[in-house]
Amino acid sequence: MATVKKKQIGRQTYYYLEHTFRHNGKIQKKERYLGKKVPENIDELKNAFFVEIYKEKWYPLFGRIKELYSTEKRLMPKTAKEKAIHDFAIRFTYDTNRIEGSKLTLRDTADLLEKGLTPKAKPLDDVKEAEAHEKLFYDMLTSKKDLSLQIVLYWHKFLFENTKSDIAGIIRQHQVAIAGSKFMPPFTAEIYPLLCEFFKWYSKNKDKIHPVELAALVHIKFVTIHPFTDGNGRLSRLMMNFVLHKYDFPLLNIHYVNRTGYYNALERAQIKKQDNLFVQWLFRRYVKEYGRYLK
Image (cartoon, rainbow, N blue to C red; front, side):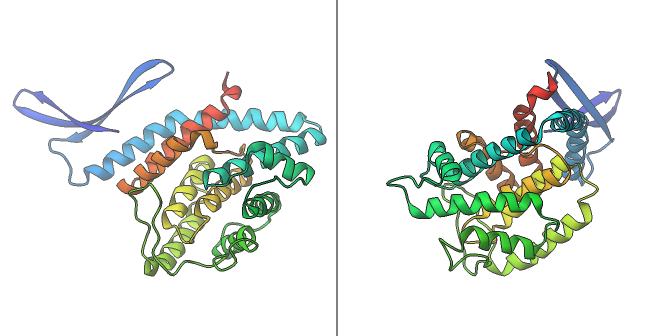
């Protein structure tokens, strides 16, 4: 993060913002002049400075990833494309549900979704939610509608109507806590106004913000509102991929094995009320996932 530095020239003191970072194996430094005193809105200026830097760093990489991904997809036979999205659907369904406590293994999930084989000695609800998630994933990919409260309520109901019918598609009316996290979700009276504000923000900014950043912000903003009793993480990851797909960027699966870093990034952003902390984590995750396009 940017820090305030001062330089003494004669009797006069001058203040700067400074951010040091590593790029292409080299240490680089960016500075921004502040004036002869530290401005009152220094936190706002720090954030804007940092955003400007990471845009310069990440956006060209995302552009390269999209370009080569689009070329690769264009050259793939139809059956190969279908196989690729099928494989992603299975892995995404496994990881997103496993993060939330599902007992199904990756093999269980693959056998269930490919062969219709129900795993033995595994919770039936986990099986039903895996089946519902895969169906919803494909429905999301072909949806002609944009994100809205109505769509999200429908998606949530679809996911849980056969396992948790009492909460499916229903905004919570009670306080909840997130196991293992210091972050406390909003009170019930705050939820609907926050959702209205969220979808208003999305409508205003969806064509102004870079799609990968938009996807990350949709994820962190929605999961922080935490409007449902259960399923907020799964919905936010679906919404993230809806945005990436809408703008023809490769989809992103947050792997179960990476859950600790994911949890920590979410919690830091929520506690400090700095969405960019999570955005930066997701940027690094995205570039690592598609690093093969950058070699």
